[in-house]
Structure formats: structure tokens, C-alpha cells
Image (cartoon, rainbow, N blue to C red; front, side, top):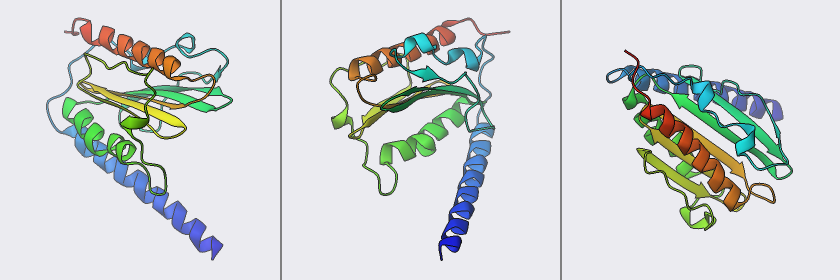
Amino acid sequence: MANNLGENLVLFRIKRAWLLSVTLLVACASGPPAPDRDCVTRDLVIGLDSFPPGGSSTDVGRSRYPIVDNAGRSVFYAEGPTTHDVARFPTIAGAIDFFDNGEGSILRRGRTGALVPSEALVPKSASFRSGIADQQYLVCDESSCIYYARYQEYTTMVAANMGPNMTGEALNRVIMEVDRKLTECLAKPLVK
């Protein structure tokens, strides 16, 4: 019986990855192409110096979605990792669809059997909201917080395990640095 359960779990993961890939492919192909920008997605991932001290970091690398230009890093603390990912979609419509119906939708609803994240559980000290982001939310459960935002064709996410290192104030500073980097990118003149 356990073997069948394991096989079913593997099949579920394969089907889920395939469906996500098809959804991303369709979303990325719709709408006019995003403008040419003088921004390297890898450079939009915030530096280790923007995170609270006391953590060890991975190098900036590609995240799990091969269809879009993306990069991310994780910083590990005693309370668990904090990750920052940035993705650039070929179209703004693709970024909107992914934010509304892809990962963002799953994050807002919560996962089956897990606590449903809530804006009511956000620490009062994590009050920053971008004036530039087109869509954004910050939700928390009892031990973690997720900031997810869309800036035109870019999406960015900070997922943090909260604790002695990643406090509400520290999360607020991380989110402000994410916003600063993306705002600077969008303010650059378009490549001709």
C-alpha cells in the first residue's frame, strides 16, 4: 500500500509540474511582448546585506520555473529559510495571469491541510506597501510570511520563516529593498 501511495505522489507531482508548465506557456504567449529593459533579472535579487545578519546564503540561481527568466536566493536562519525570487515574463498578461491564477492564487488560498495565510496575522511592524507595484499582498500564518508582488511583467516573492532573526521589522526592510530594486529597474529608459 505504501508503495502505491508513493507512486501516486510521484504521478501527482509530475502532473502538477506539467499543468503548471502548460499554464505558463499559454500565459506567456498571450498579449504584446514586454518592453526591452536594461535590467538583468539576476541583478534584481537582493543582496545578502539586505537580509538580517546571522544567516548563510545560497548563491543567486534560477528558480523552479524554466519558461520564464527568473532568479532567486535563500538565506538560512535557525528559524528556517527566507527566500527571494524574481521572475520576468515575456508579456505583462503572462505575469498578471500567473499572479492571479498561478503561484499567487495558491499562496493566498493556502495549501490543503495548512493554515490559511491571513493579512490579520501580519506583524504591525511589517507595514510597507509599494506605491509602484501593480499588485501586491503580504500574508502570514503563525510562523511565516509571504510578500508577493507584480511590477508590470515582473513578479517577486519573499517567503520568510519568522523568528529571532527575521522579525517584522527585518521583513519590512527586506520588502523595501525588493521594491527599491524593481522601482529602479522600471525607471530606466527602455532599450531601443
